[in-house]
Image (cartoon, rainbow, N blue to C red; front, side, top):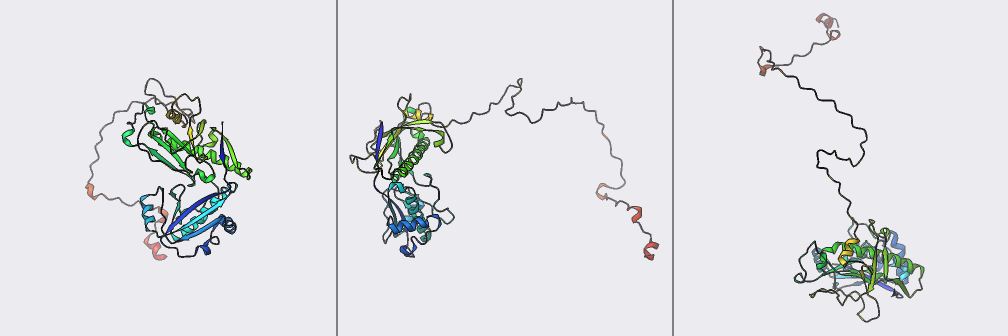
Length: 378
């Protein structure tokens, strides 16, 4: 089965710089003071109008962010904000969004502002000791975030390690894939104990989807849609630290309509156009058809097994088998000899008390001794 993904003519990405005050004019700063490898791209983008920077004399009001307490306090102290916006066709990715984020980084560093990505709802580090915008594009460089949702504690049964299928209250959804004209991906109905491996699996699927998508739009700049297969084979090369190959079934999914079997309150995530708009806003990730097991069984099967532990031999009658060959053959030990009986030896009497003992200097060699007559003659 094929899934048809529409490709828009242009994509828009925003970055927010919240600051207490702006001590310079943004028109004089951008793009001329954008340092690093993105200065030329920023000059070209501002000249064509695809990159715009707008200064607002009002605080920025977040809608859905995942800020820390310190970042929230910093945001409340700000009274102004700058919007860095880029609008470009999909085949200009990822250069267009990298140039825009490099511009936002430079602005935030100059005015000591807080750089926020509204799409992921997270901040981006801009401290002086932090590196600037990386030259190589990596999806792990804060281009994605994850929305983790669980049912109320009252509806989640106690965790039983022997029965992982009893819990299905976890939903993990990506935030940021629609920046690349892709639907978000979600894994719905897993056990809450599988939070980490569910996120790792979705991150691996996102890497594969984005890599294939960027290759396609670069080779087909005039395309208006793209067909992808609903089955995705993940190989060890698609995973950062290797791992087991596994298959993934992709299904168009409405994130507004939960499919969990349990009743309870769950926090929804709005990720795109409203339902019924004719666009696929989310893809549900699950085991391939014919997998003999539950969703939790499939999650465990996709994880790389831990290396086996070395066995310890506790039987003294059986010599242990060394794990590595010895560099030299062991030399046989000589049989022990019986110890000879010792006699107590009394110390010889001394005329000098022990506490007044002194060490006499050793006599000088004969050739160094000089008589008084020789010294006088000298």
